[in-house]
Length: 319
Ligand code: ADP
Image 1: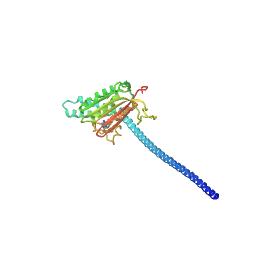
Image 2: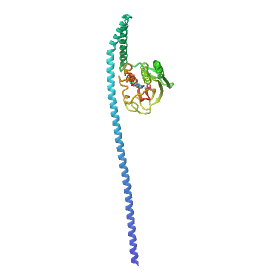
Image 3: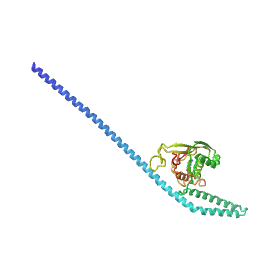
Image 4: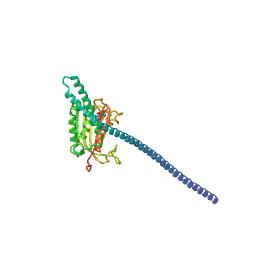
């Protein structure tokens, strides 16, 4: 009996030991499973991180290529601009002489020679057109000094509108002013900024031959969204958080197609008839705005309209 009891105790002991051993193995197994899951998560995260890094690298490379393209383009345009102003200097004086001679012959020619008078008039019109182009080309000259003064941008907008009022009326363009009052003054060359606005208003009128609306807005804002030339990079014209005056010129005209929108600021780019467009207006406008350390941008949808936005730098110490 005692022997049998001893035997069954030994069996119970061994079963208990086996149970403990199994539990231990199970514990280790479940720990190993947890470790494997953790490792899998780490590997997955690392793969995700790698993918993100790759995407970021690719996006940086794209931006770099874009910036490089823009730089090459800007340099090309700068060279074209320099050449244009060089040619203009050379052509300006001979053209002046041609116009003087035409005027002389006009006065000398007997009134009854109508055909000759007509021909002289044609010569005069052509020479005047060439003279206008040459004068516009001269605006490219970067060396040209800005005659700056403190001025309210709304005053310049209003005086520019007066210069194109006639054309806007002819095209049945309705003007919608949304000008913020009490804006800080800008330090600008009033005549040159007027030239920019007149060009934008003229283009808007041309884009709405059958009528439409021309919105002109001005407001003070704080620049919060980084974009080309706005950010905290060394070459940015505006820093984030800086205040600026915005002027928007928006029309409901024909709009600009995607295939040409990148070209409209290029010198001599025009979609107008040879007698109507020189393709110099916007390139000169851009050059003037950049001389004022400011920015000009365009957004447009074919068939819906176009919006030009100028971001004006405030005089130092006012931002
Ligand atoms: P131009 O007026 O002599 O053609 P610009 O440099 O002023 O020269 O304009 C270049 C081109 O940009 C225009 O020929 C036209 O195709 C386009 N453009 C400019 N402003 C507008 C506008 N508001 N709506 C539609 N197209 C425009």
